Image 1 (cartoon, rainbow, N blue to C red):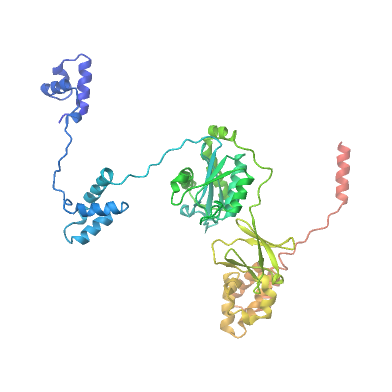
Image 2: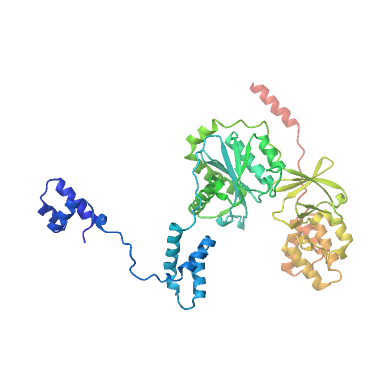
Length: 492
């Protein structure tokens, strides 16, 4: 069988002036065959007629009208699902090996007779006009901090003309995370574009029909930076395609960098954040020219950042707890019955009373969780030991596993007094030092000693020699400063 390559070589040799008999020998063709291809001026592939007939009968010809009716009514129906329905409709007629044949038939029908598919129209981007952002989950990368899984998200920001990008670690798609991430990105870019696009984040866009498209807080944020807000339509992630595509590219770059690094574990969050900064810098290095074009037309930043925290006024309940965004937190018992202002940040809460910050702690991730600090209610726990056994948040009163082991030991020895004895030990942790008490419990458990307040106190006296919170600072001799000043004057 003569190939296109042979004919092309024949033509090349004939153009050089070689005789047909010799050229045909060099290309491995009969002289008559060579003459035929030279006269036709076509390649062998161009002379082969298109095959319009089947080499074997169509096994689905009789049942195809039934299948086509389903495809017309439900275009999203998968070929495998329809094939399995055919097998149930005609038991024993179609084998599993005919699935690929049926899939090709469905594919051909969709390309020739099926409904028109949605068309995506590439857009021209102009410098300084549009930015886009979204949250992306990072759990698939398997990042760990000091050996512990680090479940987190990344707020990802892109200037669509230059594709310059940056990001901020966060733990929820809250408005506080959106506000902090967007402001960090704008200040890092050195200016603000004309508009900002997100998908339908509940922290930015109203879920139900509303006279105002965006939430009040998000609209205030846009106004502060002179941004025009845009949002995608429901179920239309492609409308925010610039950031969605950047998600994929960024995660691939991080994955490759982790493979080169040889480890997914980081000593602390600061090291991991530095690692991410290096990834962004490397990806932005090839975009410098377009980014400079874009930065030249960005609008100036406002004089100051906008406060990202949300202020909530809540009343402290009788259990010395407050409820914030469907989570429960304990505060000091002296605040029971009082109204406090909770300043909700992306990662922490600040408790304010009488225009003074009185407490602060990490913000819980998710909903219907609790954070109880036994120190907040320790005075009343020891006064009401009977409440301990069935306390709703009792598990939070075991700071470490050794405290739980100590309580279990006390229950085995004397169930009637176990709660009182354990709370006395917990009071030591609250008033002296939790780590020191934990170490004392370890020694008693490992050594088989009697676990009670007195033995723990004795261990504290020998091990710590005092509370680790006691800091001694030697008095400063002010005469040393006089000597230093005198030496400086002499030098001058």
